[in-house]
Length: 133
Image 1 (tube, rainbow, N blue to C red):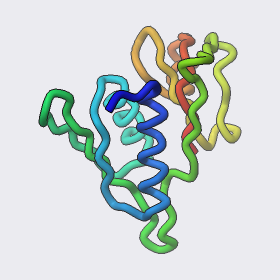
Image 2: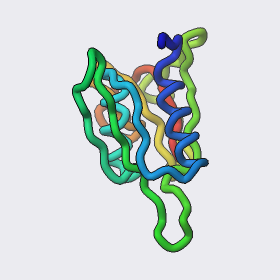
Image 3: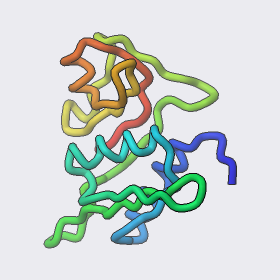
Image 4: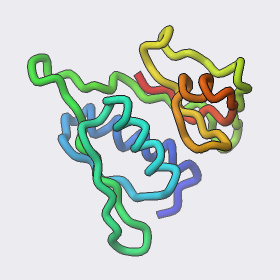
């Protein structure tokens, strides 16, 4: 199936899996999705992930993270910012802070996909892909 916005599809699959209380979600792989998954893992929003090279495209298996006591997900919400019809770019001084620093903005820069804090530290701007909190 061809999607016009694969990153929005990625975020929607994770959002739907969280609402359905799934432990694992499978997503068709691409390099940008792999980079976003790595950022989510590094920042503690997901428990683990695995890239499987099956068929021509491959699959990303993401184990979602839940609080064992309250059964709440580590991810409260995912929001797509830059869309194919309207790209959102931010310079190094204009990169937004999400929930006053409690969440992260995932930014695609010339040095790779990273969080807003890392982009500010490296003094690079880029396309703001999504907010995660």
